[in-house]
Length: 263
Length: 275
Image 1 (tube, helix red, strand yellow):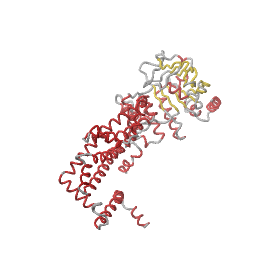
Image 2: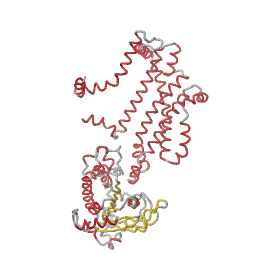
Image 3: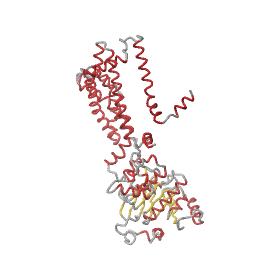
Image 4: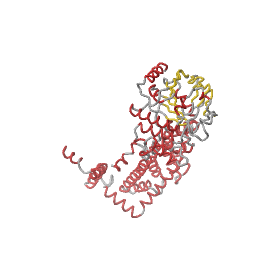
């Protein structure tokens, strides 16, 4: 079964994928199932996320749009294990999330490369067995193998984000979190990055959660688009248009309009 | 004039670079020549300021007798021992206070209070404690160098990009790896500035300490020469201090260029080689 087909399956069917061995065989490095139940996060008196319930199927590409301050980044940081929920649970493949795990990787708006380490050393930052070979392989995937020996400071913004993507992919994550990683890039570089991410996602099949303020980006890339408003899901839509999606596709345009209204 | 400048600019690269290297020396050389002329023509009395050539002769003689090297060695030893003690304590405290908020709350305000006491003001106290032996001078140097390295290490550690630390944690770096690969390199620029300040203060403190009481060292050499009105030796001592200071600074620069090779501001050198 193709991954997009998998992702397009009925939501009800993907609620309990954990026990099903056909979907998640032991040792398979495909996407992880995400389950949020009553997830609440407050900072002081301010409730940023309110009793959020959400199921994400393994290998699904979910985009979350919303105004700033709507709780998007907080949700992502909770999924990454960088924050702990005030209430409710996060389960990955049925197991409660407990802190940081190599199964989950995150890309930030800034690439966050160590300026004092060469590109390849940045990609292999987690070290471990054969890290250099694996880092080079990952750089190959993002088309930057020839820049392995450079300092990050000589790279362009887009190249830095590609290095950050390579770094995230080294450990073959099963959940990739993206916090507006293309927000600071120029339009053309942005399109390149979107294409690259799509290709790698289609190949590796990790579950992806992308935060963006760009509704068009969300509709172009994702299987499913959520609108997060005031800490709750205001809208949840599947994008059924086959990829690659032309921007002038009537269904895409209609969805874009609907989502913009919901934001 | 304009065309002269233009043709100078058009000269082959190696020649221009050679000429470029000479530029910083123009002023010192001109000053020394003027000084020599003034001394020879009697414009400046030898008792006031000896001619540079006389200083050179004094230096040569002192070098031959072995006295110069002896004094320089004694001074350098004091400087380095004091630097090692004060520098490592300052560095360690800077790291601990920079990394742990509780440690900072505990000790930083006390340290800031001490910092505002000029360390040379405690010389009488130091003499009471240690007499006029080596310990007194080493203690003063250690106190003097402590604060610049402490302040800059602390500041460097505090200002390391939080995002990078978070990224390191996300990628499962242990505390040790986080310190050596993220925090320390991030603080290095500031730490090296601290070291350069520190070296300046190190020589300054040593000069004062050796001038007050010593039986060897450059400070002693110049004070002794003063008693016998050997102005050439006094000037020699001052020049030795200048050279040692310059040498220490050049060494730090070399370390900086290596340690901060990643920094865009230091990549000119790399490009120069590549071009």
